[in-house]
Image (cartoon, rainbow, N blue to C red; front, side, top):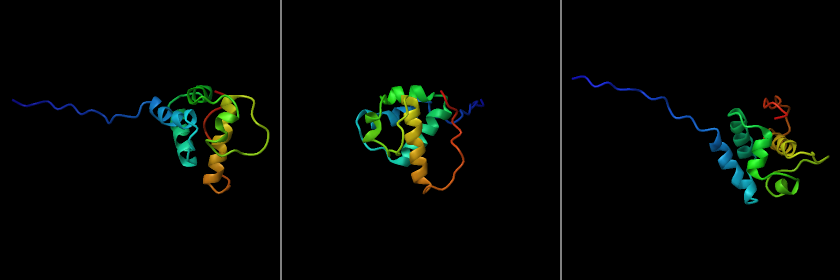
Length: 111
């Protein structure tokens, strides 16, 4: 008697997995390696999470929430948590690329 075998597609990571990996950095004030910040944020955004939701889950509300965790660009501090998180992510992209021009982040904002 033949046995039917059903192939299952590989399990894709849930939208929450990258965010669950990113949030503890901010919640424990641990330094986030720039590459991790960029990759985890990109994966979270690609999964449909909005900047506000990412910031809220990470506990980012004001500048001090990011000061010891990620690189800090100079200049005016953004007025919203979502824009602050976007700004420090951009700073990490700049450091990773050595300041070279790179394509803009394709993660829509606001949101």
